[in-house]
Length: 440
Image (tube, rainbow, N blue to C red):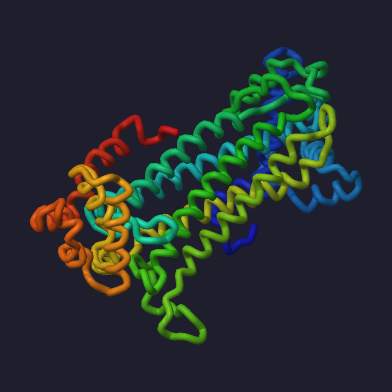
């Protein structure tokens, strides 16, 4: 992944050193498991543990790999070079490469999940803060990009909060599905390794043993995992796209942070472009394209082939590192988000009150006007308001057909903004109710 879109904690999980150290840990834990069964001298295991993984020479391993053309074998041969004489021929005995590689890969995904979940929780906290601050900040709700009815900016943020909570719940669930290890030998039959060794290794790694493997951990698990990451990315894209729309000059309801020394354009000094939101949108799209690759990895030949390997070398780090960065960026952006409540109020009034048309139509039907007739009457008045630039209330007051059914004072009361906020408290209570925040 590009360093530009990488954060240190997540990058560390996908570093070569972390991978080699995890391979070593899995291999020695397997020896430890065999020693517990009496198949191996415990002193040999202690000798292995004296090797310091932090000092592994990556270049030496690559030299060996260039000779044998097998990454896992090269690592095993390198450990043989470091090990005491009594340890020779013990390392990796009874295992196949995928035992180590797959268990390591899933361990990395598990560790990556913890970082992403923590960042999603921080993101949810920012949405919750904005939702509470702007619970009653009125703004216009839009469908098809067209003015609909009054809502509040807090409701927008509350929806984003609820969606993020669902994603946290999904990710916690799929983390369990991917936290799986495998030490079952060639073809997954345990013919060369006792299943108790697998249990020991997995327990020490914080994993569960695969119930039935072939020579690999089944890739439907990974397909589900990366699909959920794609769903999280889709949420980020939806939210960043909406915030970009609200920053359009003609709307101007929010603005992403813009520092005092920042330049929005190389040519036009007046510009404040939503570059952070656009970046999040683009990164989210990239993550979603990875889902199809993960789905393609499910269909491998018989007990295994290696067509998934090259894909996963990029898929694991690129997807998790990019998502980690995108969540972090959106969280920071929300901390400095500028909310223009005055512009929201201005936009709400922009079309002369036609956003109250639904309530007026309903009142007419309650008084006995047939639904279609009421619709046409209010529609006609609304269109006249738009064309004339007048106020809907004034247009309606001049409409005898409508005023025959409703008094002037009653009509004025229908233009009360608080009517649309009367159930907001209940919505907040429902969303923020303990035990309901991760429902999906």
